[in-house]
Length: 320
Image (cartoon, rainbow, N blue to C red; front, top):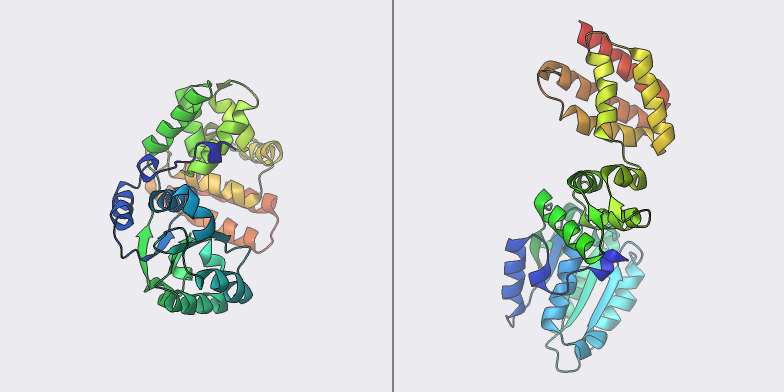
């Protein structure tokens, strides 16, 4: 997997997150190494930074005995904390290491009981064991654990950072990728570096010349121009409901999109149409209607019926 092959090994290689990297470097040189909580969206470097910290503070010989990795979404119950984690945390570090380190990925998936048990373990064995908790939502981590950790809030990666890394990988793998292909990788992955790299690898299995068309094909992602055509069929001087509806049906069939996937794409596209084509008042009304569609789909309503109503209402508003 390219996501593993090209994963940064040191903090200096981590893409973006300069402020956090600087703080981690400072903490790595201090004797008083704290528990840490990494939070932020997926695919922006949380687990990579944790692995880089391991490489910074442990030698290769020390890692096997002094580092434990767990995915809390799988090992999320209280028994795992009482047995696996506690048994590892209570043993003294070996090989000359100052302390042991436990990495809990997706810690926000742990049950409340497991988190309270984990808090006691962190407190009891603080002298010999440190924790790095990784989560998407820090609000799902109980306050007693948050208060015992140095909290690092990872920000979404900038577009130029994602594209630069993709260009680096493409060069290493001898792929030709144009600017539109890079834009499509970024847009379809929504800033998730891991997803973008996976998409690039999938595209490379089809061709060595990666274009936006290839990216949209492997991602099952709707081209912005197709969505724009649907919206303009509704808000143009001569609205065409049948043409707009046919295109919605084709998108759902061609890309295998669910109704809620299509809501997400429409939401993104409505925000990018120029003011001269879509006045602010009409844009706001369309977004409100789209939120109603999303709610009804989550309640189990028929997607085609909901999008028929959305397109019809959009035409009616544009003509009023």
